[in-house]
Amino acid sequence: MAFVGIMVGSFFGLISAATGFALFDLHLWQSLLLYSASGVLFSVLTVLALLLRPRIEGQKAEPTKAQATA
Image 1 (cartoon, rainbow, N blue to C red):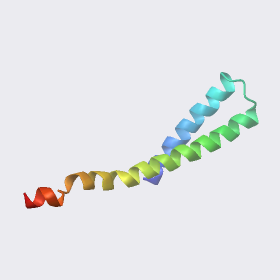
Image 2: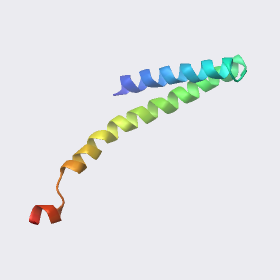
Image 3: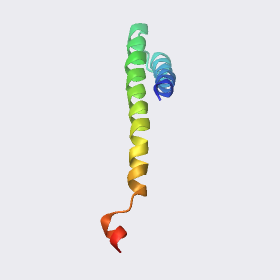
Image 4: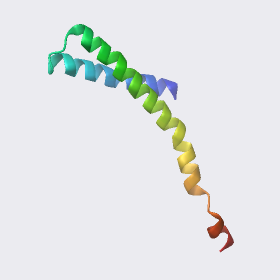
């Protein structure tokens, strides 16, 4: 899970830094800050999504009390 989060964060961080540098005329140091900030953000979001996914699927599979007694 952590490996996937790191890879997704690195990829999207690189894309946002390159886009900011090339299209929005950011300075190099601003692009490096954007790379690290967006990389951390996407890594955390990916790991959280992967952690919460089994719980959400597990809750859908369990019947409620009304369904179990019917």
